[in-house]
Image 1 (cartoon, helix red, strand yellow):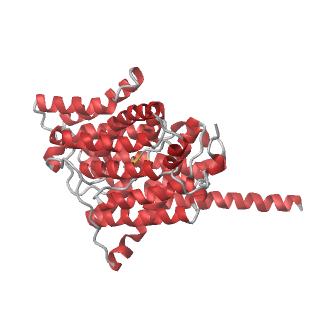
Image 2 (cartoon, one colour; image 1 turned 90 degrees about the vertical axis):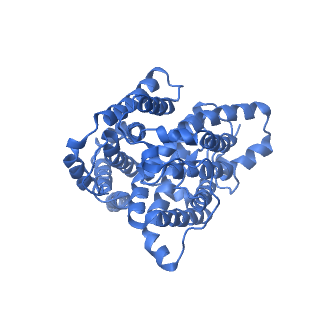
Image 3 (cartoon, helix red, strand yellow; image 1 turned 180 degrees about the vertical axis):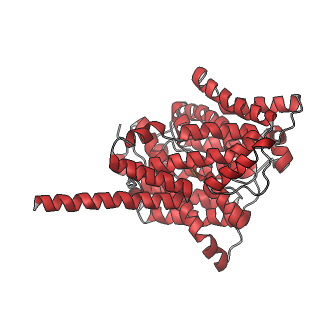
Length: 427
């Protein structure tokens, strides 16, 4: 069976190719089982990412339903699962703080058009050549930043003012707020994270995140724990999707959010193609990189129209999809529909979920996101270490885009120096 390398450049969704090859009942059963498995993982994760991003939980669910469906239906990968991703938490939170919800939706909307344009101009293949130390550096930097952003909800801290976006001022304020820690919230948060890690080791096929969130909600309700929940902060979640609506658009607002939209576009393209590449490594197949970027762009446009946050390919959910036996993009499309069903059925119950439990879920995400072994391995070679540490440090101190650009420029400088040196020695 061909691995898809010969057609990697085509603008044809993998779904179309698979259906033309023949799709039977056995394939459908495999896809439905995988879809249910992924949806169980995506449900608590989508809410946790939205809350951590500074928006209400349903914004993450909208992205999982609308974006997740379109990424699979139109994408260039058989197995890619799209939805809200932890890597975007920092960017989304900063955008909401600076421009408000309408500004965020406009940013996602514009980044969708930019991603589509990148794919149509056949630039998707170039993004794959971002140096490996840069990807490890910004991924680890994001993981540390997200972890720091969860400390408030994890411990139920009461801050004296608005939580700063940058890491060092954030840690300073959190340190001042330590006397306000809630033992109940901290126990729920650490207990949730610990349970997820334990279930992953002992019962890896069980939905650890969902089990931890449900158990935390039951304990909080049963013992009337004095902790903040989804309901106390956001009220009851809607039990369905809203109608599509264009974000507020004007020349002034477009110019204002354009830098943020560029950052969303860069990260979205990198994360999506990185996730598709991981899926290729697990299955021995090749994704269609330009088609994948086009699909990510369309998914982000649609997510913004329905009030959702940014959408990208998600490595953990894509890997779960493959391990669960998925055969085609139908599994990703069905996973989105399952999330919608869960949303309709369980919306009244979501208000009991403790925010510290969602913070515990994201602590696990941060641990899994950080490429710890890769980070340590890259430190053994000085040039790779320099690029890695520059990207990592600047991502923490400044922001994601600054870190990626600086890391790529430093790697390029090393490459140019090597080439010039080789020419001189050869001459």
